[in-house]
Image 1 (tube, rainbow, N blue to C red):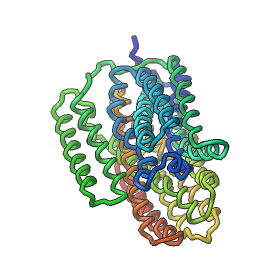
Image 2: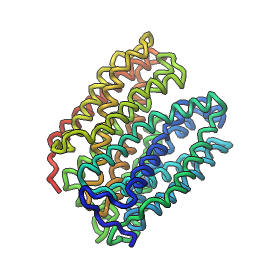
Image 3: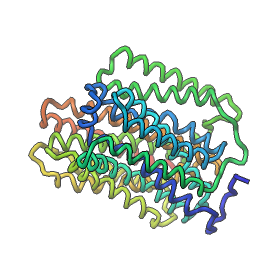
Image 4: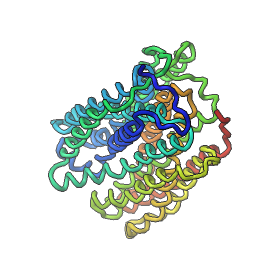
Length: 460
């Protein structure tokens, strides 16, 4: 038997240590995709990349992540989460090596897209494994809190590791280290308990094709749109995304066993999981992804120093997600998600007033507040992702949640970049534009917090 029975509350399931440690380590490594933030100039110089290519160097991994998450989550449910996890680790190692030896920007971008798809396999299969092994209750709350904490820690460590290895040698060193870590994950994956749905649904090829291509077209349009939203190619990509995603909805609505059960959207908890993840990407990750660049230009910090300042946010996010399990179990996850989004908004409002003559300490209180909110939100989103779907469809829940997160992050980075650079020339103009972007993000996060507080998921 490779299908795990749902563990009893309070019962320590076989393989539970590996089922927490390996998905957490994989999530940490996957979220270190932020590494190029700190060494973008060196990477672009080494690959002879122009302005448009630089956008793709940074954003291409989001295309692979967003396009593959839901499909790979469903595949993990049906064909074995350990199997998909192991394949993801192997693909991450190979794609990291491709990035390390890339002679041109095109090869590097292709490698990053594959890195994204491989990371999607690790994220979806890892959280699905956590849900299969840990029963609802305090043990699952602890496990999903640890998994959520790795999101913040990975975002923190990626730029620091890349900047540190670049300072010590070359920007390519980080990708060799990532490949070695992925190989270690793949080797250790045999200790994971295998789990899959009791009734496999089969491969939904029309769903996989329409969703994957539709999301890829959407993320590509958002990324490319940063150099001109009215360019014919960008408009064509948006149109293709709309047609493909509409086709996906039609396909899934007609299938007896769809890859994504559209009926789940009638569940308030599932809506919270998807909308909360989308807003987290849009209004929180979007700002924070751009802030390191802003600090180097506006405040004159080195890439490593900017990464260390940004770590105030991500380390607090890590700590808050770990401690979320200590909150009283009677508090609904939706209310806690609302509190996390509200804290994130308060942190962004506290950072308003960024100016070229400001000290980095000026940002510290806001980064701390936003980090605490982000950590709480991540822990609640991970819990909602697996508890808002049938017990044997945790990969589907994880895939839908994380797909929404990375689509939101892609939109957020593009919108924040457009607003920030539209504030005028030079450091003063960038500072003004960034303040406007942070204010807009805070308003979106506050509105979403009110929505999350208003939705009342029914108990399962």
